[in-house]
Amino acid sequence: MAAQGIVLRNNILVGGGSRRVELPAQHRPIFEEGAALIFMRWTALQLGVQNEWGGSRSAEKAQELLHDVINWFYNTKDHEMFDLQELLDEALQVDFTIQAEDDSPYQVARLLVNMHNQVAAGDFSYVNEMKSQAAAAASSQAAAASQRAPNGLPDADESSSDEDDAEEGSQGSAEAMDAEGGEDMDMDGGMGAAQQQQQQGPVIDADGFQVVQRKTRGGRR
Image 1 (cartoon, rainbow, N blue to C red):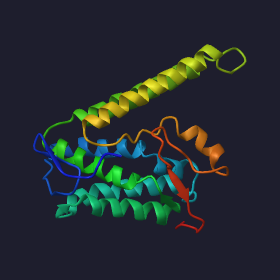
Image 2: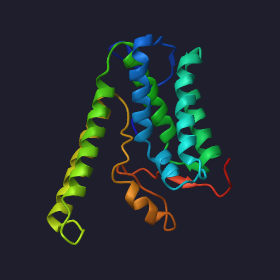
Image 3: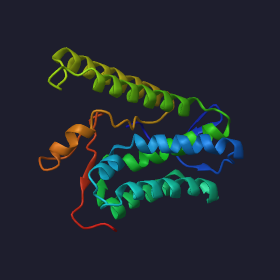
């Protein structure tokens, strides 16, 4: 992980906390879309939703958390990154019984604060980049599903090609995130193996982080 600290880049704080930056009303839809895209790339949260670690309402709880985070930006006096990190970490523990050991709440909080400040300044490049990556991933998945072998299984060449594409996409995402001073929260490559590894050991994401350790106590239903 990149070292913690505050860097001023294009009049935008990268890392650390920051004072509240007013978001123009016309920019709010873009910020909210960006926040949703960051949540979609948050491996720990998506594992909790996919495996219903928060019960049958896991997907709803994730949406409620997104709503709470958006309102946090609109209503808090100062956008202290570590306050947001605490909110995210507590939500994982209480609602999904997840103890994050990969520091992902910090990473997500950092991305959200930086993205908010960029959008407030009229810079939508990072949100647009995430949208492009999401569209490309969806298109790739649709193409793979439509090009199955007659027996319903992918050809060996197709499988190899898909793996190469996924690796290239992950590397591209990492480079884009590094350019913004944040960490890649892309969950590509981590979701499929996670289900098989739940009983075997910790889940390791594409960057080599141990993603989550599920706690044994029950969360709120």
